[in-house]
Image 1 (cartoon, protein in one colour):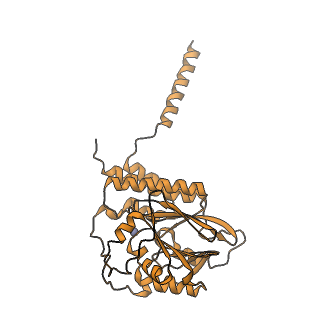
Image 2: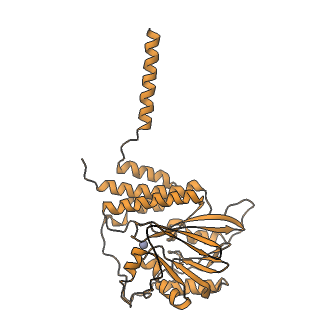
Image 3: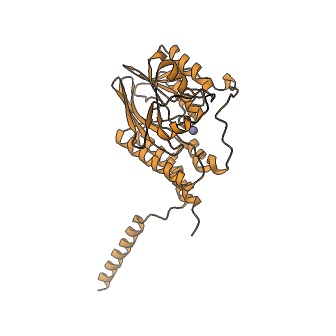
Length: 331
Ligand SMILES: [Zn+2]
């Protein structure tokens, strides 16, 4: 009898422990930030600091003027030489902002277009220096309509006839700019709604995924590249910083987009994570590292693994949820 009671007691204790292990602790902002820090690891520690520890919208600042003439900063502070980074992907960005040229057998897709002062020297002259013809630019993909990524769009559209692809909400914002806006105003070409779209050129397909959050029209991408003939899949996060109005709903939208993009990256087997600011993916360093010889079996400097790519979206989603939760009134 004693033995039987003891056995029942042990089973009961085991059942309680199992129940406790399966019941997640209630989420708190602190707990979510700690989980985001673990997800970030060393790979995304700078991005973690920027969005989880010191989000831009914590202290509201007036938005920088997006229109009117503005003195271009000293070229020595931003200019970067163009680099071939993969067999079919070329870095034509600055030290701070990324722009990429994806080559296909039927022409070039440019992803993001920099501030107006940089688009001609980096993208037009950069492609030419790399032996590519900017007249072959067929599409210009804008991750979101902030000046550091979209001011070159009108130039590439008007000079080369490239079709500009932007999220619907960001087109609406762009078309409200005055004609004298820096870089000019592109005409509406391809407008991407919540359902996303696919852009195919010369046998290469870019999966364009609507990821509202950073702006309401932010687009992210999944697309293939080749490293010495080997196919790799890139997950390109189109908007990172929390510089939207500090409202719970905006953080929820951002959080849901990170989940959506993480799911897409998982389904596609992405092993490369890219963003449009070099501080978030070390694009400027990696573009130069890609020029160095590699030992046998050594990976491309941009290639990681699927788990590392997914940790980016886990981190960014957790940071957004931590901010959202911190705004809820305490019960
Ligand atoms: Zn932005």
